Length: 323
Ligand SMILES: [Zn+2]
Image (cartoon, rainbow, N blue to C red; front, side, top):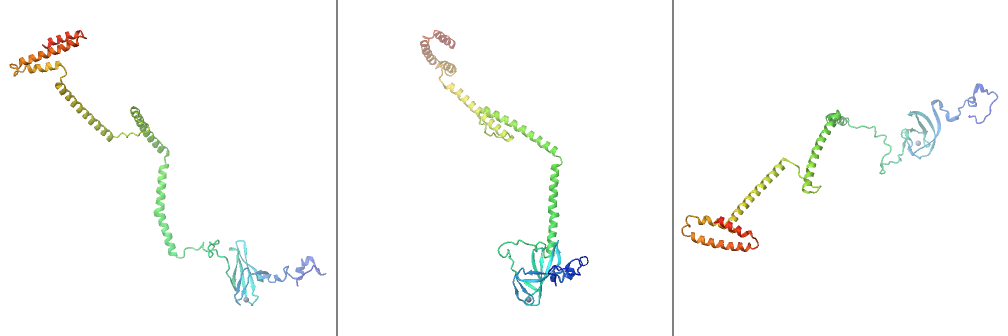
């Protein structure tokens, strides 16, 4: 019997017994600790879910309480795992339920069946939050796994490594001597810039000479372009020369047929009159007609020379010379 009061009997010796419980040979937890030497403590345990008893096959609802034998059977890291052994209240069967610290739940180990009433998000159109089972499970077919790993290995050695090496070599090539590379590039750029500048100045000169707009793009100088332009120029020059020659010829022809002045007529008529065929018969006629013309001219000249004093003298001298 557990000591309910603080009555100290007369033969109680504090130094000898230590406490009233030890005096009476009882545990502080009383009858619940009757199996404490086996590591079992009797505790009140409430069913966390509905179960069916494995012996009598009766349904036992969640929340039914039992005097369960609680025992530490292991540890998940530092968290102890307890087992609760309960005796069915409808029969003589026993069932055992353990804690599962990894998944923070209880599991039925033996003697009963748990009614699965957990909320399954996958079944209800959602996604599983706790996926502790699938993560460690590798591919089921070892040959397929081997093939996969072999393929990966060959891809690594045949494709990925050479590509990586070539990229690395290119990178090293360009990063080995940045100074000289930079120098080369800048030198080339400078030369190009110089040429470009010269071309620009020539273009500006041409534009300025012909009053072309600034935005106009001139054709780049080229051997083909140059030869073409030269051909065109020479052709134009040739045509111009031919046209000039033709004009000159036409002009020279026109002056001979044109009755421009009396002097040209006299000079023209003289060779005719002196020709051997017409000398005998026609000479008199020609001379008379000439005389008549000269007279006419002189009269016109003298009429003009009424304004000009030296005109008549000029005419006479000319007449004398021609004569
Ligand atoms: Zn039962």
